[in-house]
Amino acid sequence: MSINFRRKIFNSFKVRMYASLLVPYLIFFILLVLGQIISPGYFSLDHLQSILSLAAPLGLMVMGETMVLILGGDEIDISVGDEASSAIIIGALLLQFYPLWLTTLIILFQGIVFGALNGLGRRYLKIPALIMTFLTGRLLYGLSIFVTRGTPSGLASPEVIKLSSFPMSTMLWVILSVLLILVLAKTVFGRILYAIGDNPVAAYTTGIPINLVSIIVYMLSGALSAFSGLLLLGIFMIPAGYGVVSSYSLQAVVATILGGVSAGKGSYIGAIGGVLVITVLNSFFTIFNIPEAERTLLYGVTLATILIFYGRREAIRK
Amino acid sequence: MKQLKLVEKYLNLKDLLASTIFMVGIISLNIFVNPGTLAYVGSIVLLAIPLAFLGLAETLVLITGEVDMSVGAGMALANVIPVYAYLYQGIGDYRFILLHLAVGLAIGIINGILVGLIRVNSFLGTLATSTIWTGLALMILHKPEGPIPSWYYGLFMYGFWGIPIVIFGILVFIALWFLFRLNKASIHFYASGSNPRAAFIAGIDVNKIKLLAFVIDGLLVGLAALFITGITASGDPNIGGSYTLSAILAAVMGGAKFTGGTGDGVATLFAAVGLTFTKNLIFSLGIPFYEQDIVNSFIILVLLAIVIYFKGER
Image (tube, rainbow over all chains, first blue to last red; front, side, top):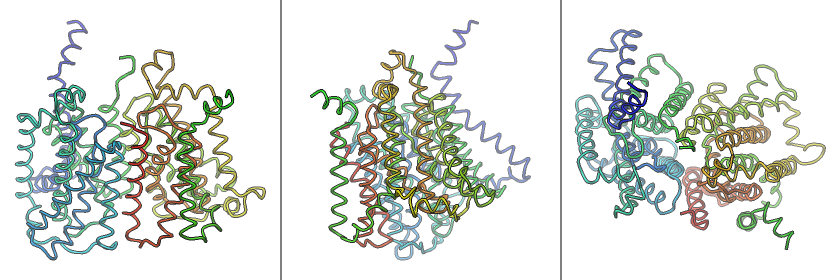
């Protein structure tokens, strides 16, 4: 058994793919066991249900983030949390006047418009994705403040609460997840995403409309995260403060990277594991009653740690 | 002819011209909208100094082909720790100034190790550290607190040996930039950014240069914090806010590219002054409070788009 042979096995694409899929789930189960030790009753069905219903909105945001990160280059969407926050605030406002279906449509439209803005700015103005999506986030923040005059009002209607609680939201998440996994693995659109991520120049020369595809991906990401805002409104009951929810952007990025998604690689299966890990971590923060400042710090440390393992660039001499 | 070439070697005339036009144009627009602005041009320029130092920090990092998303949060941390030390530990002498720079240095070293040595993607890595700095700043001071030592505040009120602190800030800025630019080592910075592989083959330790860029970046963030502490006369954990984006915008308007290899300090200074006057213009135009956020972000977006379009970075 030479070292060379072992390295060959480890480097073989499939082994590494399965390993990266496994890691988040492993962490998830370790955290669950840890939770059971710290506070008995953590493993109970009731609590798992509540974890699932809390995970669903983040799961939707991570769907968009997964597609964006697969595109590679420097594509990233850090406006997902802001999309969700403004959807919460504007959704609560709209629910006072309109039925749920119309509110949902308007919010989806808003998500698509700002997602398209992300894609257009990224592709045609050539602004780096991180800065473009950050700016879109600031625009959404400005919009929410402009619309509500600084004081969010309104309440979640009973329908929204039902939509965002255990069986409904989880079912929705599962259906969308299966759809996304199938789209990524089996359809032309999915293959195109991986192709662009793997080698954009080759994808371009084979005639793939890269600009159009990435704008569509950003639009999907916007729509999904705006819809997740509606679910969050049901969970929080009231339009929560803007800052609380916009931290979801970072959580979505952390979950996706932890799930083993990177340019041209990874799938949503791993990212679901990442979502579960982040949700359990969140519940730990709540159990230990860790204040907002320390939470922010811990997210930063988590992201930095994950990046040290997943986000390194190649050495120059290679 | 030879002299002109020498000037062109150390000053990027095209970027300098563009940012000068922008600055002069915006200042005259300000005075046109509100002639009263003339009376306090000096204090608006003082407001631009922290942004200018952050822009310079960003320029240095962008030259080496990386980006720093943590300058705003880093400045908030370097602003909060000394104020905390003064309020609760009684450190109010010259160490108050040193503490700003020490925090900046620490920030720079951590970022540099992360990006230069561990080779983490700088976009995401500094986004992570920016979250860490914000969390730390909020842990240390939960809300804006003051006052700061009176002698330090006096510097900003009455100047240093009778010289207004603005002039001092501008002189330090320009001196630092030419210290960098006239140094042979700056060639290594530009080379590492424009073609890392070629620089590596030519014997430049690219990763070490990136580490060095982030360390200097940290020190400049500390300097920016010194000015923001004096201007606001308090420690504010949320002061970072939009500074990161504005700093990147200033650096890009000053000639830096996201792909690395270009950038000019003096032009960045002018761009930072112009941007501060743009903000002032929004105030002068009397745009209502609740609309200011959206207008401000929109203006940054448009300016960024224009700059990137004309620089042909495609």
